[in-house]
Structures are given as structure tokens and as C-alpha cells.
Length: 252
Image 1 (cartoon, helix red, strand yellow):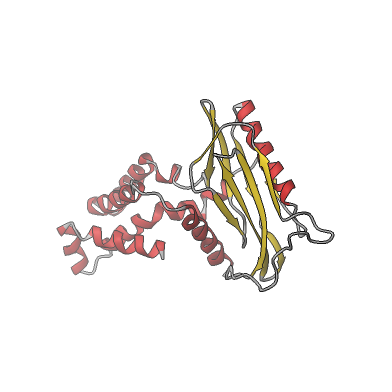
Image 2 (cartoon, rainbow, N blue to C red):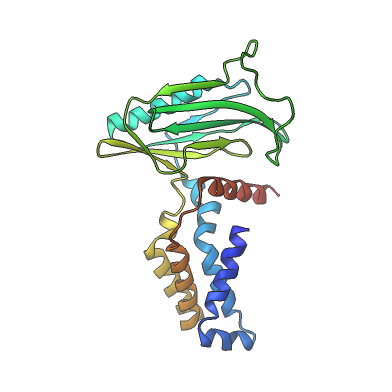
């Protein structure tokens, strides 16, 4: 629904220009360009930018996930980023158990306790609905413990809310960057980066203007710029759900 709302808002804003309204009344698709400009930055992100990321570490928990091993690998990447000054890109893969089943797990970055906490959760279906009785027991026989906490050992700042739920399709991406004396944790760092740049907004506007005319360029470039400058960032969970929806659309 987020993409649809951006498209509709873009069309509505385009009609603030009388020449655009007049062109639309004569059958022109000029107002539609406003909608395209409204959704284009995020479309570039969720359909293209995420596939160009390179990871320094990919964590695949496997069918018998070990919460301690996951937490220790993440903390190791965080310490490397802090000690070397080189950012670390980490991908956390999902735990797929079948065509429509995944084992859910969560990871929490806790700056106050200076810890990374991992918890292995229930089995969920593609609708992210837990299966009854699928929770890992407190002391599962023959399985690693479901909860783990590992000290980071370096001061950290989390740029999004602390808990990250990982379940269906592909997992989330984190970037650990040292800034001054603290380590910053970024979620889906590829979002709102080059695709939301002022330069690209100008290039899009000029290119469309040269091809389709002045008002087409103003509408397309202007609405692209509006989308780029949206003030309040989306919540982490909203971004994660949009990433999941994008993958579902591609598979469908």
C-alpha cells in the first residue's frame, strides 16, 4: 500500500499546476508522471539497489540454529568495524524449512547493556503466522539453546529500534560503521541513498523535460524531489515488510 499511496499523492500534487490539469483534461498522461515521480526513488531501491550490495559476512543459521553462534558472528563483525575503522556489511539469512515454512528468530542490539541478543522463535508460514507448538523449548534435547547474549565490548549507537525479526524470504542487511568513538548500526543501508539524491532528481527532471516537454520535466523532477525529501523515515518494520512484499511480487 505504501507504493500506491506515494503514486496517488504524486498524481494529486501534480494537479496543483494549472497547465498539468489542462493537459490532463485534453487526454494527456502528464498527471500520471507525478505518480511515477512519487514512486520512482523507492522503486529503484527495492527493485534494484538492494541487489548491488556486497556483504563482508553472510550468516546462515541452518535448520538447527544456534543463538550463541549467530550473536558471536554479529559481534565479531561489529568489533572488526570498530577496530579497523572499515565498515562491515552483514547479511542475516532466513531459516527456510520448507516451501511455506520458516523458523523465525530475532536479534536485538542493546546499547545500554552493550549486548547483542538473539532468540530462536517459532516456525511461521508465508503469512508470518506462528504454527502452534513450534516454539523451541527452554532446554531442547540435542539442540543449541534458543537464547543468547554476547557483549559487544565497544560503544555502539543503534539508528533504528532495537529488535529485528527475521523470518520469511531473504533476511535483513546491517551495516556497522565507526564514527568517532562509537559504532553505528544501520538497517537496510541501501535504502534512501543514491536513488534519493538531488543529482538524480535533477537528471530525471531534465531528461524527461528534454524528451516530453517542459511541464513533463517539472512534474517528474519536482515529484521525484518531493519523494526524496520526505522528512519522517519509515519504521524499521515497515521497511522490512516492504522488502518482503517486493520479493513476493517478483516471485509471483
